[in-house]
Image 1: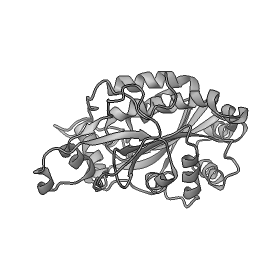
Image 2: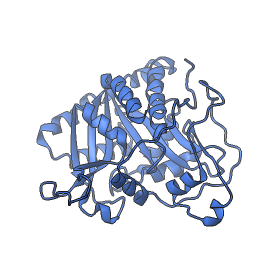
Image 3: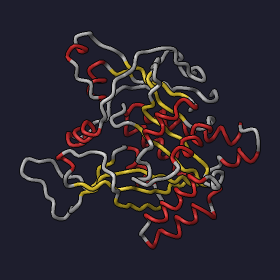
Image 4: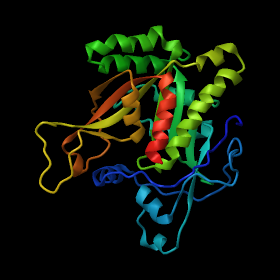
Length: 324
């Protein structure tokens, strides 16, 4: 299989079946944005599996639903396709990636700009998702893995570790967290995955397959043994967000209502990672993603997980089964 394909062929285009409540949450969370006019936008490499196969296309109606553009005038113009494609990170993605990561550590003031710079400088492992031929090159998703030891001297990583230590209140996990942050940091990859709400779920399997393939290739293809070794991860550390029901014992569905979900996963893959994790903890967040009435009984929580690298093949299998 060729190295570093810029896209993956998707076998099916069947959307993930969210509950009505989850769809409501997704639409309430989606920011209004317009798809810019097109100009030249080149991938770093050609698609290698099927050069004529595109990632999922959205019809004009779907674009309107996804990104909040409800113009009747534009609806009358017929279907406009939005082709999502995968790209290597580059310097011009700075603004788009920074927007995606603006609440990565809740409302903490930290050196986010330097963190984004590190992500963009690591081009051998990492992917951004954009709309093909997008003049503004808006970034709709990001996934990458950064070695915790390789960047330990960077201010942003020191602040990130300080933040995780501060929010971890579970005494039985403090030592496990500290081991990954310091003693075992050389073997730990910080898995960063952020995207706009309601991105087509068909993108997820090739996005994660691409990431873990790149990690594997980097252990062989990087120019120095030090760099090759930095991608031989034994564990992944994830920082993400979920919604938790505030008073689950007091909340019961009314007659005719659907069962109330104790936990809402903003990203479906996080539920899989949690199932496979060796440990995890949550912490309350002060920032809020949505203010819809459906969420009045939910609290936005940060979720930190550790997943052994040997669980990744299982994760990839589970993700493909979930989206298929």
